[in-house]
Length: 414
Ligand SMILES: *Cc1c(COP(=O)(O)O)cnc(C)c1O
Image 1: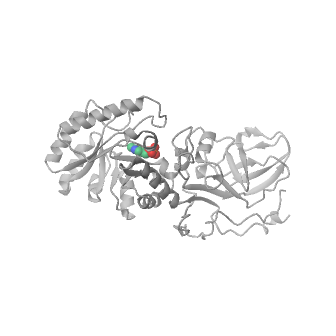
Image 2: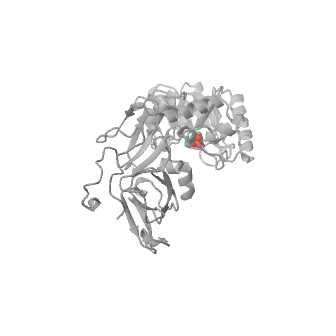
Image 3: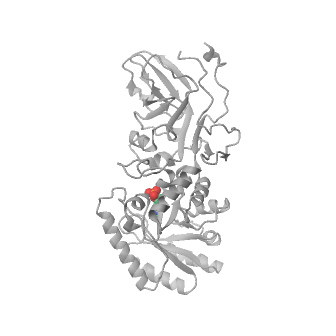
């Protein structure tokens, strides 16, 4: 057969695997959230490489879409964005004993302060003779980062002292919510109550801040009483729903990542054929199998079972374990239209499959699915409104803008 010699395998113009990133979707989602929370400002979280979308791509699109601030976990992430020319106000909130506060202040990166950092930040400011811009963080119940209410008055007093000495300017007071994705839970009310107390305590001690910020995406979309002066949104900006019972579409959000590849092989197998490592799955009838050239080395979770996969016009399910480089889809019939080179979409685009569906198949959430797509998968930035592929990885030609990759000409199953 011609497919064996390889002569019928289509010429490759597009990456073999790609996460197609659409800045237009990010702009739309930021604008949608901003319209909802106005007059509150919007900080867009682009930590963890923009939740897997590319931090610089995400930050540019966020600013174009109306973001007022950019948020990251680490100072190193903020410095990379500054080096890439992102000039928006920026906050970094998770520090270690090795964090370079001097560089952060020099590059005009605001710093979240939960406790011990305050002395380090003041020392860095003193060294530079430049006041640090800080946002004090109170732990109102999440039990993670943030100053406990018990020590809050002490932290506030220290901040007042450093502010009076010209070493810092306290511009924000913030906290992070634990259960905002379940809007009916009363713990959010309890956290907001502690937060209001923390703000009052800070004001009584002499701080007057312009940025009180609490809400993540779920709170921005479900708790107007948590909007305050600014919301800090991540997952919604990438077109993902933070709620288990509402889709992105329900929320008016557009997924900004489409994960695609092409069918690497198609073959007919007899009843009883075992599939992939561990032989955890055996087909109970003769069928055809499609080989999908992505695996956990690309961020496709090994644990995913019966995950949906779009091939051509139909949605199939994965069968057996995901391996490092590949997994198998049962085409449900011996006779199949599917052939080598056909387009495969794991989620996003017009597939009708969401990262949340993969989350369900892999016992996790959409956040983790998008964020963990690996570095072996090129990010191909294709703006659906501007129609111009930016940042196309070297060695690949543009050409997937219409969602097509060359293919479909290889022979049938063998
Ligand atoms: C990641 C993060 C956010 C954004 O959360 P989403 O649920 O993605 O909107 C907001 N605030 C802090 C402190 C964060 O770490």
